[in-house]
Image (cartoon, rainbow, N blue to C red):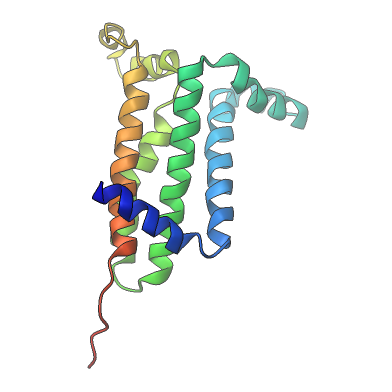
Length: 172
């Protein structure tokens, strides 16, 4: 419960400045739409148009099953909050700000690399030669989306603790 309390206190502190709301929403939009565009990058390279781009992004709502769409939306939103908390800490702390950014890096990397769609996750791992062994997972690849959420939440709770931690200035 202490982690959730820290998260809500940090959210109040960070989102008191409306600029951070914009950072969260734009990060969310970039991560969510980037997922669709990355999957279809070859098609976009050959036949780029704004109509095709918007259709690919909006088509994610109909092409994903409910659990995959939920995982993608949730991980994109949480990653946007992680980016916002990291930028808040970097701005607030002159020394030690990069330490906070490094703590959020694993969550951001997983949210970008691990797709929410289980079949896509299996195909990405197939590139590494381990795809067939992962087909025997009980949730058929949803585990990777859950792993992504878990790592992002750890990063988020760590960053929330850093946001809410107060320190005294050292006088020279």
